[in-house]
Length: 266
Ligand code: 9D3
Image 1: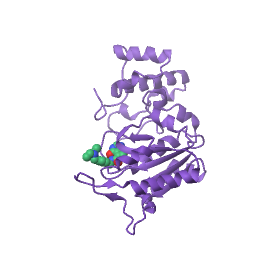
Image 2 (image 1 turned 60 degrees about the vertical axis):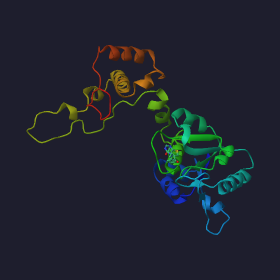
Image 3 (image 1 turned 45 degrees about the horizontal axis):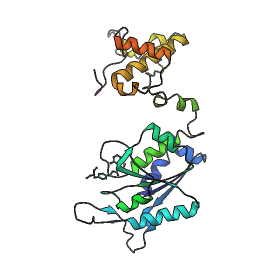
Image 4 (image 1 turned 30 degrees about the horizontal axis):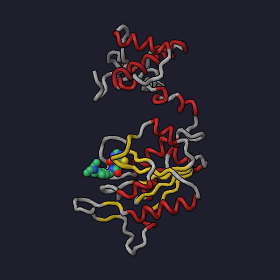
C-alpha cells in the first residue's frame, strides 16, 4: 500500500515513520510512504501556506491553492482516481472498522489539517474526513501517523506474527487478557509476608492448555465487562464465552485478577 502524506511538518512525520514496526515495513517495501511538504506546492517567494479567515476571527486557515496543487501533482503522478483523507476534528471517528476498510485501498492520500482548519473548498477534493478522538490536538500530523500505523499492521508482511493481528482484542471485540512473563514470582524484601499479587497465576504454570484458554477467556471477558461493557454488545462470542459472561454477570465467579485501574469503573 502506498501513502502520500501532505503536511507542513514533513520532518516530524518522516522521523516518526523511521522507527519500529513501521520503519521496518518501509525498509522491506511492505508499505511505501511519501511525505510531501505542502510548502513545495506554493508559488510565492515566502512559501505561504496559511491566511486569515474571511469574516474575521482568531487563527489562520490553510490556503486552498497549495493543497489543490499538491493533490493535482499526486493525481498526475498516479494517473488514476485516488482516495483523499483529511484529518480534522470534524471528521467521523477513526475506528478499527474504518482502519479495516481503508487498508483494502492500494493508495491513500492523507492531508494533515492545521491551524483552525482548511479552506472549505478543499473538501470538494476530500473523500474522507477523519478524527482520531474527542480531544484537541495542534494539528493532523499525529492523527496521520496513527492512521498509517493502524492500517499498516493490517497489511501482509508488516507485523511478524499474522496470528496476533487476527486474534487481537478489537478483531474479537474484547479487551486483551492479562499477560505475564518470567519470573514466576517477584522477589520483594526478605522476611516480608507473601505477596500473591506478585505471583504469576498458577494456572499459567500448570501446562493445562484447555484450562489456560478458559482462564484467558474469563479474564478478557471480566476486563471488558469492568472497563468497556459497551464492547460486549458487538463482540463475537462463542458458546463458551457466552456462558462465562453469564456467570460473570450473575456474580457466580470471581472477576478480575488485578487491582483497580484508574478511571476504570468499579
Ligand atoms: C475543535 C477545536 N477547533 C475549534 C476552535 C479548533 C481546532 C483545534 C485543533 C481546530 C483544529 C485543531 C487541530 N486538530 C486537528 O487537526 C485534528 C484532530 C484533533 O484535534 N483531535 C482528534 N483528531 C484530529 S484529526 C485532526
